[in-house]
Image (cartoon, rainbow, N blue to C red):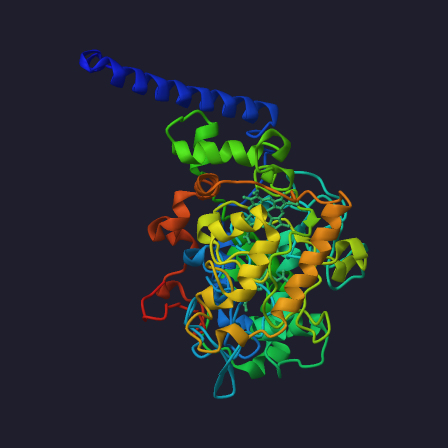
Length: 503
Ligand code: HEC
Ligand code: HEC
């Protein structure tokens, strides 16, 4: 306190004194929580730098449409650093778009010349902090470690993937979860492959063909990739003067994509700085939100930490939280528009409508939220935890900021309320599963979470404080974005937004 305060009227001094004292009390409580729950205790990880040669190669591969069967979609189509490592859309649009270089809002799936709804069934998660996952990738964990060792990103043993049956190893998965995952988007017709390239052939046929295209050898020559320097890039990254046939394999492509993704470590958020001792790093409101987040409902908190644990804010397990289901679906339910989540992998009825707990790092920039992108804002997510029935009703009625007509991707469509006719039934089915779990005492989602409006605001403020300032700063993200002159072939995707501005 400085001396001037002494000259203030007594009443004011005591008000200020009181609030300063409250402040300290809250900091003390949080410091106890941080210590008791070991919140600042993270495993050491061996992650690449974006300046490593293999990560640099991965960056260029991530941005080339040459990995899309019809040269019209790249990894970056749905995972751009400036778009939070995702695509800003509820549901992704890959091949057959209105403009292959337009990313984010305004990218529309085309059925011939007709605008149509996205054909990708789920929301694209961020690729930021990919190296921090130890158990699994994808919303249903269909790429998963069979020998989980914390801190290793799945590098400690076998990995199961869609190429192997449940709980058995995919012997070609590669060295970590990120590399195992990077083998699949190119095989998905809607994301990257298209509908004619290697149609009807195996995933490995697709990968081998793409590697041959990038290396311009064998069956890839006919694709005519055109002038490029891929061979030199691969030689720089992997060493030696090896010939393209031997050097440019899909295994190495996946490895390089993975190293690029694993170099995206964005964990220096205000809450981390607070835990490291900077008491001014987060606002008073966010501090109150933190207390709610890490305190059980029995003790007056919101109980979020029951599932959102650790440095990545996820237990990497599967839970039914019953966010509304929108989109074309995964082929489940009566008309195929439903998505049974983890059940699709395990076949266990308990897993129906369960999805992998999302990470909350950088959550401010990774919306819309949920596996189908049905939740427009952090406030809508928090209100869902307060009352899942009300949130579902609001969604169905397109009211209180919820519903398809309140999602930026669909809000301008005159028929937004009827775009997904089975969304109500599917969402209510997920809600019924959650209610049954809660009644049986099997759910970690509290039945009645009586949060006031200001407590909702506090939780939102805390969630926002989990965002590394770098991900909101184009300059800071520049090392992960190739410039036009870094283009290795004529297929680099140099993205624009709907207004034609470069991303
Ligand atoms: C058309 C959009 C699209 C394209 C193109 C695309 N992805 Fe994705 N990506 C998604 C969607 C949607 C998911 C979630 C799928 C699911 O969980 O079933 C996803 C999931 C992922 C994940 C899992 C993240 C996590 O937290 O589990 C990673 C990693 C990833 N993609 C990397 C890539 C790479 C590498 C490429 C290029 C080889 C690529 N993606 C191309 C849309 C896309
Ligand atoms: C029972 C476990 C559980 C609890 C408790 C829980 N969550 Fe979640 N959370 C999840 C799961 C699972 C998902 C992903 C659901 C999906 O994809 O459909 C999720 C998703 C989210 C998302 C969206 C992330 C994204 O990128 O889509 C946010 C934000 C979130 N939770 C915040 C919270 C907050 C705040 C609380 C406390 C009020 C909380 N969660 C309590 C399991 C839980």
